Image (cartoon, rainbow, N blue to C red; front, top):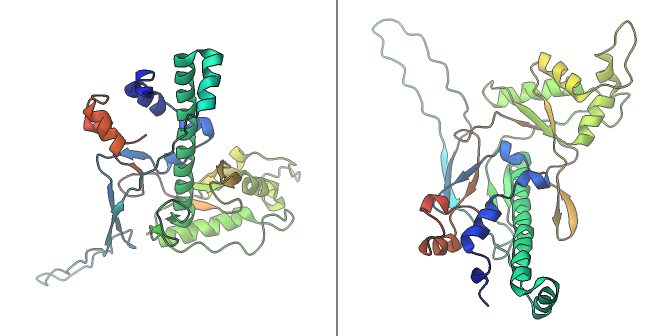
Length: 307
């Protein structure tokens, strides 16, 4: 049986690429946008310096100061392949024949299986994005062919100090003050550049909204509101130069266990997305894509990378 006779490869590829990750709640590509490259290698510069040192004044006729270039390490590697398959067994083939007719049944099953496989792949990529953003590293410890210590480490700065008072106790929590302090620390570690977002969970955001100290910022005529909105708090934070809180509660299934993409009780300060200076999600070319190129399913090599 040749499935290509029933579902053309080019048509199936188009179907797969039209699947919107947002359907599954995957949206971290706004911070690490997709880039498609006609290769399987990646490279990036890792440097601790984010701003140039100030220049020095000098007297006339005195030799100019020699500036130092920032030190960096060039990190290279290969994009690991990802693939899955779902066998079409004898029993299912007979059931499809009885249900829809052989060709129509097989074709629909191929599309259904393709969507299921793509969802799993997009979930794995989203999990990797979450790990990169919140821990600075992506592990490959449970994947086929990798040893237990394989981790891509991007060398992000040391984590900010956690608040001394838990935000889960609304009567004593001071999250707005804590966020102001943490943002000051973030800027100090990033050459004075402010963050653009605070990525966290709805649980953390609710703790911020529920804190008595947060509500006190909105008291009028001696009356403190019982409820305040996220928009109101983000406006308040903006007045102090603190970026807005952005919730992410996406769950993926890892070996049948619902797993958060980002930690439940963590806040992560992120800069404005910029592929050139911050990061990306890199899709490379696959061996299957090369076969599709040879069969003219793709018009050019540039169209081959990615799912």
